[in-house]
Picture 1: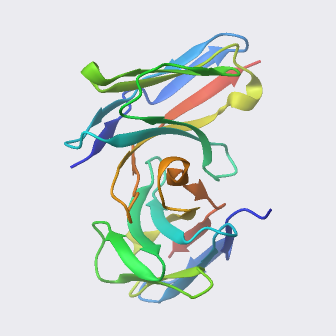
Picture 2: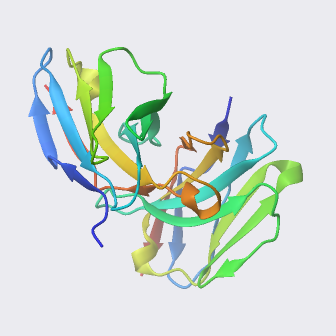
Length: 115
Length: 116
């Protein structure tokens, strides 16, 4: 079975531009979460979606938005890019239920560089 | 608010030595999950182990073992007989149980370097 997939792998943008990152969860998983990982730090939670509804939001500005589609794939959008948005953006999927459903499985990430 | 602290930043060991990573957490919930993830140079986070807050039994899985002590809010992780392939950043993470939301709070990570 395919794992979590993310596209693109790498991206270079200029300050002020907009970016869209995409994620496809593991087949059968209905929850997608997004994390931002700045170099040398642990991942920071941005959003979680379950059944197309936002279930959690981290401490990020409104320039960050996301959505989940009927097929459970997801997009993360960032507007008005700043240099500080340069990071590895990780997508994770989980079944989101009880017991063993709580593991989150991560994709390879999208490395965003803002110049 | 949930918080995870990993004090050591970089740990170097010679191959076949054991390495223990410390993790201390803070949470106001009585039910929560603790995790260890591995991040090799490729960047993808790999799930290693999970422990429920109501189960303090320590276990061994292959070369991995963990020591969960609720009284001290610690969840330490040990790699036995380290190998070069174990070189990676290891993250401890906490998830408070809330049906519909299982966000993870990560520590800053421990860079493990295994020297052949």
